[in-house]
Length: 206
Image (tube, rainbow, N blue to C red; front, top):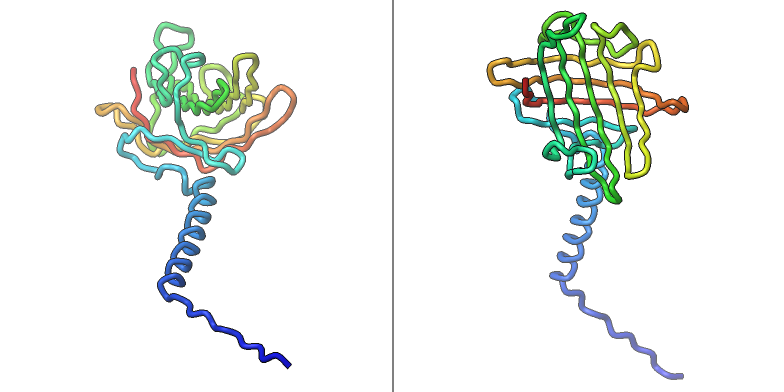
């Protein structure tokens, strides 16, 4: 009978360390990617005029990025806000608007937009309900998905109450407004999207 002998291989401890390190790196990258898709990918809810905006759109992070000359021809700004007193209309009102653009591939543009029309100045500490109301005293939330051939708009004005905007700070000297928001919006087919964990800290123009 033939004698069978087996040679044992010597494992290099340096190779083991390298494999362990690579495994940990892959694990952490995977965890980081999962987090980046959710709330951890959003900017902090600051009150310093940092010009930031973010929310969860159907559970996934939405933050402004890219440019879209087609749908945003006035300089292709991805985040813009205005706050003014409209005194040349009847009735007169204070108007705050915030618009955030995310530019995707294939000429796709997505917007999340907030509006407040109010008889009185916008103040910190006040929450404005997103609901159907008369033109001179209301707040709205909107999500718009558009490409070169069509657009799909989701609005809060199709239901009686589906969200709110809370103003945490408004600085009229340095011209910025900060706050949080959440809402549901529906399109003309009755399809719904959910906006959650919204926050903004944006500079505005008059």
